[in-house]
Length: 269
Ligand code: IPD
Ligand code: CA
Ligand code: CA
Image 1 (cartoon, rainbow, N blue to C red):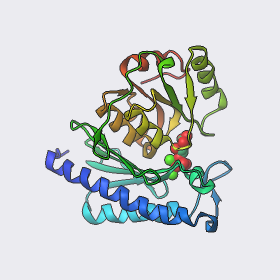
Image 2: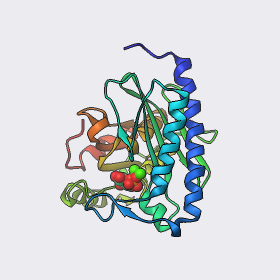
Image 3: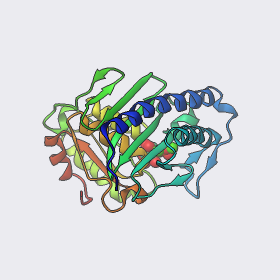
Image 4: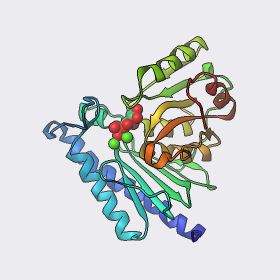
């Protein structure tokens, strides 16, 4: 596979930031008129909601990317795709936190990750409600707007607040024991409804870590780049075909990460 130059990656990084903001502007227009949106369910899970806003915003992102980088691959939550052999794949969740979006809770974002030669190298999360652009490119640090980010410096889970997420893609038994173990350690948690946004908050040092038993690539890849570039560590999400099937997500600073691996029931790769 032909390697990509630093300049080619930089071009995609700058463009990812532009696309995230353009997509978020479009999403925000829908958000202001959310009472007019028809709420649909994906399959039998009544918690897994979607609307025309998600599909329209993804189509905008997809077409902008295809126009600028026609040879690049694209994986989106709403339209699918994704090829593990591709040289460069854009991974997009047009609205992460759709349940919040449709219920009028200000916890949602646009999430864009870029994989080059099998490695996540660009992560961008844009939160239009707070006008915060979380961005990172491998080897160049992580920023919220223009301020550098650093993960939380706490040495124990009780030194900060954990972000957690779960869904009906896993059994309650996969997730619930972690909450008990965390509380027994003197820790605490929040779940804001947008996994991508919470992983960005780990990079920003606002949360001490994040755990979710199963996330999809469009929710997790941006945060993985953000957290690594902010000095934290994450599990190897793309192992076991994570791009296509999803995987668990665990992230924190090194010391807390080691502690968390002992609190979860899943095997971490
Ligand atoms: C979901 C949110 C949620 C997380 C789920 C995701 P969606 O994405 O990120 O916080 O727990 O795993 O599926 O459906 O809002 O795009
Ligand atoms: Ca999502
Ligand atoms: Ca989504």
